[in-house]
Length: 96
Image (cartoon, one colour):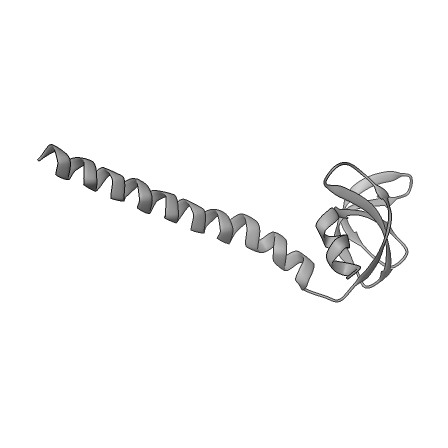
């Protein structure tokens, strides 16, 4: 009887892990991916911001991120001619 209880507990933990992974993907990962896939844009790499992000110049279109405007960095939508901080992987994909 104790072995059956342990088996049920293991299956419950596996199911809980799967549900948590699905929820994290649905509510965190997927919205972030969709924010980069909504519209066409062209960005040009300028300089590293930190180990995971780079500062880019928006050539065409618009993109959401940390934008440099009026001498300060604000979070919002960057348009053509703005500087924006984006994930490094986005620049690597854009330049291929």
